[in-house]
Amino acid sequence: MSIHMSEELHAPLSARRSMVAACAGNVVEWYDFAIFAGSATVFAAVLTPGDWAGFTTIFAVLAVSFLFRPLGSLVLGPMADRAGHRSTLSTTILLMAGATGAIGLLPPWAMIGAAAPLLLLGLRALQAFSTGGEIGVSVAFLAGVSPAGRRGLVGGWYLSTTAIGFGAGLGATAAMAALLSEEDLLAWGWRIPFLVAVPLGVIGLYLRRRPASPTIIAPAPVLPRVRPGVVLTQHFTTVRRCFLIAAAFSAAFNTWFIFVPSYATASGISTLAGALGCSLIGLVAVALAAPLSGRLSDRLGRRPVLMTATGILALVVVPLYLWVLDGSAVALVVSAVVVGLVVGSMVLPAFLAEQFPAPVRATGLGLAFGLGSALIGGTAPLVATIFTQRLPAVVVPVYLACWAVIALLAVYRSPETGTTTEADTRQPVSI
Image (cartoon, rainbow, N blue to C red; front, side, top):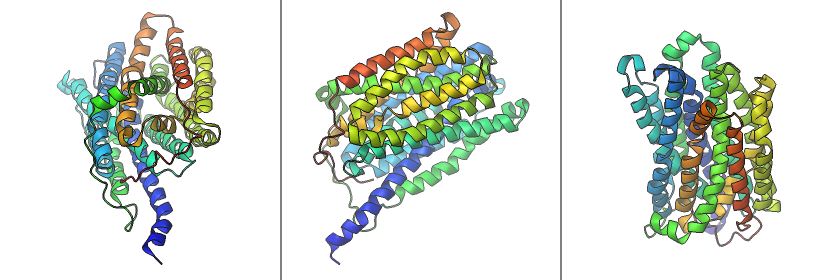
């Protein structure tokens, strides 16, 4: 058998193994983020003075730390575009797991006072830096190894593993809340999911460092340095459009799966375990919808699927949110499922990746998603908290609906890429 034939036989296995490594690491990354989100009410009680001031402090920590996502994109994206993806993806998972484990060791407010939320901010910033680099690099990598005509499906699986990781984090937090008394949960139980992140990170690191194939993966060529400023200048219109779409997605996701369960718990609508359980069901809907919608976008195009999803989001978010405020457990479950199905259908991994040429894909995608998820998505829980305290309740979902409409217009003005040839964008990729 010739070397050429051997490479062809190994290629499908190599691609599958690489995709599994990227997606498995993605599960670990989003597990780490989710346990922070699910522990917001616990943090408010343990790491701040408590009450609504503590609640606002935690979401302010979340909002400020999100600003480090674009920084992670600026540092790690060009590194991956220039020298390959493997070492960069290994770096992101090490940073995330280490920072998450350290959060589980933080002393409480009663012991160190204001230093507790400040240390939390520092560690959460490190998490956000890691995630900012992770998203752009891993999505760009998957776009490079995806089989022709199946990039939407592969991107859907990536989004699905995001939901799985986030759901696992919320599930771990909900389990602690359900199994332990409130006293034990606040004293030590909340730390367990954070400490578990360390061995999970080791597993993710192993999967990402394992060679995809012993025979065909050569070192990535060293390319000219990718300058984020030049990428932003040359692709400004594309970055702007992708920023608006990512902002709508991130705002809806973070409001429904971070703010809503925390607000439902703080306002007495549900217990912490019950609210997180409802969100977990919604995340299952995300995980199921993402690959199906991704495959549909491979056949029909990205724009029709994404425009349908953003249009539905704009229509349903206000009545669903007001229904949740009625205090019904059914409303919590149904709204989480509906929103999960909608955001899971937004086919963002494939759509955003295809908007940028391969040599600058990780940088451009990272900039757009990093800025959108930081400036709009990262501040969404804090904005919702402030709106809830000072304005009529309907303002929160109207805010989300406005972003959905803006995203719909941005998609409308974007080129269709899902039904075009992919020969010019598929390039050898190293992980």
